[in-house]
Image (tube, rainbow, N blue to C red; front, side, top):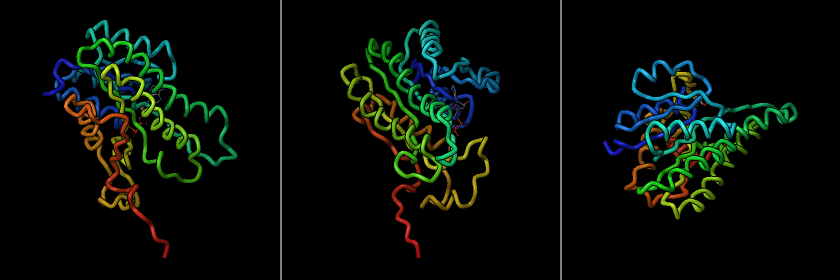
Length: 243
Ligand code: ADP
């Protein structure tokens, strides 16, 4: 129970990976604040002892409200998991500027905003803080029709480097995770080909990602900084031969 008395904010924790990460911190004894614009699972999460706040992570005022309410209730924030995200996969010539902006703003601008606002408080903590950003294996390898998503996830990796340097003096670490295909409630049945894309011959679980978050935010591991941890069963290391 390393995370007792720690306060953790997880964005995009109303569903999927974020929800699993939020519940993992709660099981470790942390105070957990879930921030999502989808409130459909809030009642169930509140019943498990998590706080929930409906916000749009693209909006500065919403992020400030998230931090203010967290500080008001718990007095400090120790860990921020920037997980909220969207994807649009469309042919290049059909991708509109609005769609591009929506993906970039949800996935990257939100990381800048939330980390900046959270770090204002974290830097006063005696024990500093830790930030984890959800990148993607799509920051390293691409597929057709993925311009906005690829740029957003690549942006998260570079933003992680910059933030790690800017916040190091305050004992705040900033790392990111690049998941492979992850099975969630929403994506319960991933295709066989998704399983076989990973040399591990399985898709990932929410627990695989939650464990990486716990590792990166454990103060004992604070020499790991600015890193992108790939949790993908070896997928990005696989060479493909076309016969
Ligand atoms: P994954 O399978 O990676 O977990 P999801 O789409 O289930 O993917 O998770 C992304 C989460 O981010 C969702 O819960 C979604 O509601 C949330 N989200 C997306 N955009 C925003 C936004 N602008 N503000 C707040 N939450 C958002």
